[in-house]
Length: 195
Image (cartoon, rainbow, N blue to C red; front, side, top):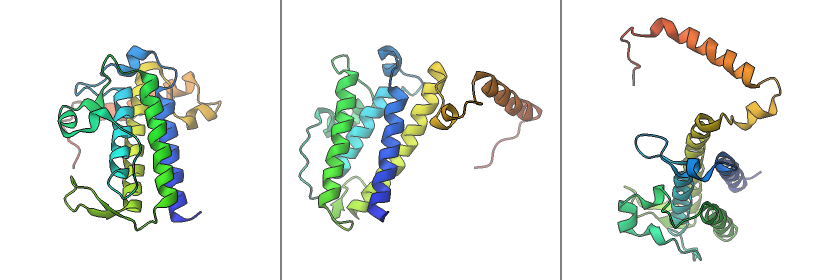
């Protein structure tokens, strides 16, 4: 597998984890804030679609999708991080798939060193494949956020846990108990993690 194919493979894996993390959830749970900063599941999907679309638009590839909330004023209001009442989960998931398809078309047409200008980066001049590296990283990071938030809602674990029949609820409870037991000696010790 060449470098470009590897990038697209890992980007697709991240996207699949993103979609899996929201699939089958109650619409309210998928939309509501799950952290004090307002992080919500479908908002992260909307954000990833917006970011990926924005990076492809930084290349010579003629993007063929319009994203209404991707203007500067909307981005300043964080509108790409949550769904308004008139936006549907299907609309956001369809957009995410359409953006992925657009990126795939760009990847078939643009060489790895195709120039890109990302005006909001400190060093704005880059290449298409460096944008793909950034997208793999961003998608994986947010997929991890989504998986943790989903687990907090209904216990859905990652694919590795689900693929192992030994890792059921009893296994998870015992595993969690062992970790807590190892942490207890440090409770109230006043030690801070070095950063």
